[in-house]
Length: 214
Image 1: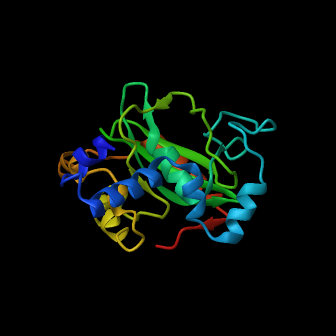
Image 2 (image 1 turned 60 degrees about the horizontal axis):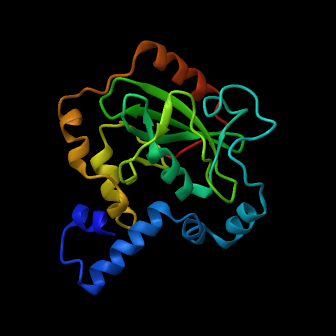
């Protein structure tokens, strides 16, 4: 808990602050608590689904195609898993949801330094999140505060500040990374999609069976 006190400041002996920090910690890390945040009907569905790190019947590169998506525990589980990913060079990612192909959610992601872009496929209908990472990724050792959204960002990732502020109503805003983590990159406009990524993005968008409302 000390690391959360350092992140958010304040007197850690204050009961209200300690309770708030404990709630944030559980939101980030506690899979059982994350399940409590979903609708009861959906929770029952997730609990009855298989728990595995990778679909034994999946085909294609793990996490990079809808036929072999990353299993996670609901929408909060998606945020928790994707926010833990970092590239082999140590760059964490910003991400947003493009929509879905069938029951598989599709996310666009970019490294914090703007150098690498990705399309990731995630299956949220499981009781826990995968312990595996797609090729080229590892799990960060940093505090895995949320760094993306389970919604479409029209001006991704330049609308990160606005989208983070919109999470105040959901109670998740304090669970997000500090704006300072990406403010310089946003100000310097370093996030430019490569042509190859744009082509892949257009192809994936054409195959979406549902899209996030803008």
